[in-house]
Structure formats: C-alpha cells, structure tokens
Length: 160
Image 1 (cartoon, rainbow, N blue to C red):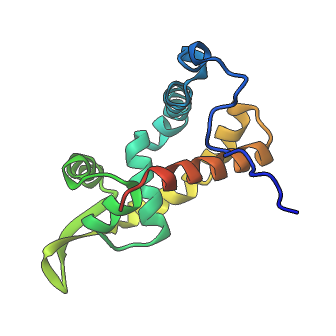
Image 2: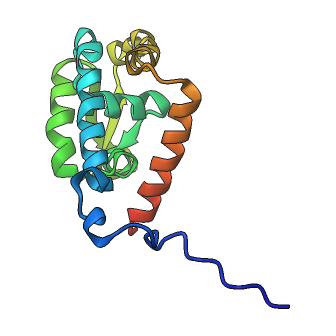
C-alpha cells in the first residue's frame, strides 16, 4: 500500500492566510535584522575595553584561530569583500595588533599576522563570550541551537 505524499516542509502552512504572510512580525528577514543589530550592539560595551569594534573582533577571532592568513582567506572566512576588510585591517595595524606584509610565496597576496600585542589581546578576549551569554540571559543550549539554525540559513543562502 502506497503512503500518501508528505506535505513539503518548505511550503507555507495551509492554515496561514496570505495576509498573515505579509505581516512584519512574520518576516524572517525582519527578525534576523533586528536580532543581528541588537546582538552586535550588546557586544559594543564588552569590546570597547579591548579597543575593538565588532567587525575587528571577527577579524581577530579568525587570526587567533590561525595566523598568518591572507586577505583573501580572511574575506572568505568572514564573508567580506577585500574592499570592506582593508579599512578594518589598517585600523588593526595602526593599533599594533596585526601586521600586513606581502605573502612570501605570492607577492600578489597580502599576509596578515598577529603581532605580540595582538596575540596577548586574546587572553582578555576570553572574557567576551561569557559576558555575551550573561547579557543575553539565554541558556547556552538555546544559543547552540540558534547557532546551528543560523548556520543552516547561511548555507542555504550561500551560492559559492
């Protein structure tokens, strides 16, 4: 006996009217935009004592994980264009946290390396995630579930 086809999990629920689908509070894009803005704002006072903005913090996270990296590699990791990264990197270099030099194996590539000061800042940055979790007031397991869901959204919207 053949089973009946299952409704697509991608289709809108039949019980939701078209007018409901156009309500602002039903929009995934709205929820993501507001949540992103609010979470990044939450980071601001935590990162300020480290002398970092949120985008600079993301660059430093990538470099703390693996240094040196090329400009292209950092751009790929952060999903940012080199033109967006360049001003960030210049400010990090001016702050004495990174150095930018031509890659030894490829003169066309820019190698980004942590300075001693940049490596030392990592110790202070270890305090950032617990402060964020505390300020959010959400269980860590909920944040892990949210992260997994957002990672799937990123994968679904990435074309490369």
